Length: 388
Image (tube, rainbow, N blue to C red; front, side):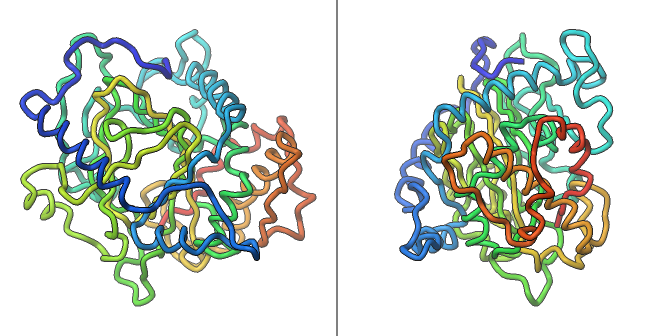
């Protein structure tokens, strides 16, 4: 598998819908750049996250932090992921990689590798993921020489990549997590989204989260957020699209919105536009989705999310990312050890940074010293994901 563009012929288009899609992308880009929700991570004099950043995030449901990951870190991530991709299954029904060795995910019990037909919508209009993708996206015609299926998502990614683990421990991103979810924030889950040119599947419009929607305590931040670190950047053709402000509305009727629009091109949506090294924060309750990648550009997103502790503790899972369970302090603490490992792994790679101090486990910091030999101990750690 390659991370760069590959020539799959001339069939990568929207057919009769091409002109409308081109105009939609152009108009969406213009609206996105007027939202006032992008820029570098900044702090107030007291070290707290700049209030205008928080205000823009809560107003729109997302924010693009520019220039977070520098060139050397992007090189580390790219090298790690190239090695990782070579060790994934050669096909959906194989336990071997393309070189004939046992695939790195072959013995995993937790869900890891997800495949889709080229330019398809595997979830839209189905009951998968608790039916949270009720409207199917347009499926462009793939090139005749496209493979039958390709990988579009890898979950539990921190067990396979130290570079991704170091991103997970980024002090500025963890400070943002604390500003949004409180100092006692908890993990959610992690993954790599792989949108290959001419192949990458769409993700139908949806809101994340299956619990809490009817709770009297529900608010605009109940289901947490995801960070989306971009290795190559993302465009209106291969990136996420968002309907700003919908994180405040509760559970919206997605099917009705698509029916009213008469298309999957929701008129109020905007694309998340990023350069390499940008990291976006996306509220999980905001209505979002992505179109099939008919462009010539790869999107590789290092994805990881966090919750408020109050949204997780004592709550029974929704059963989307792993088996339903009630989350007690023991499970939260066990899952949070990965934060500590990420912090220490990053401290070793970037000694000039001031490491983040994760308050819930601060007193036990010395127990979580990272070294490469610990990577196998993270196998199937995502069985303990805190999915709500």
